[in-house]
Length: 82
Image (cartoon, rainbow, N blue to C red; front, side, top):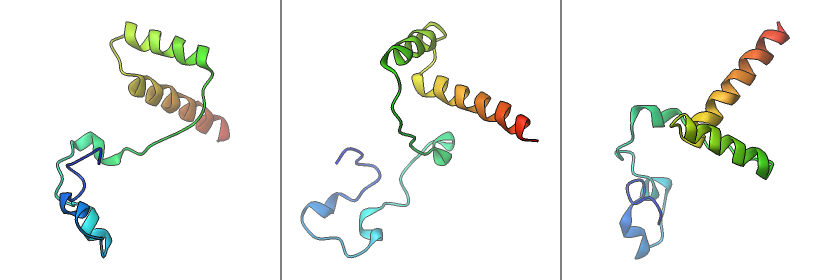
């Protein structure tokens, strides 16, 4: 398993009977991580490279740059809707 913190280790030896057997509700997560969800879409390779270079030059992670870009897009488009 990828994330040992979130899932019970004893599942390798037995079949789970419920979701509680798999998920560990007391796992440690940071405060900002609690509201995150995964977003998956295809992006032009050249645009991804440009984004990576721009994010790196500002000492940002790609995820941070992507969140900021999406946040700005949503704000502009919400205003246009009104």
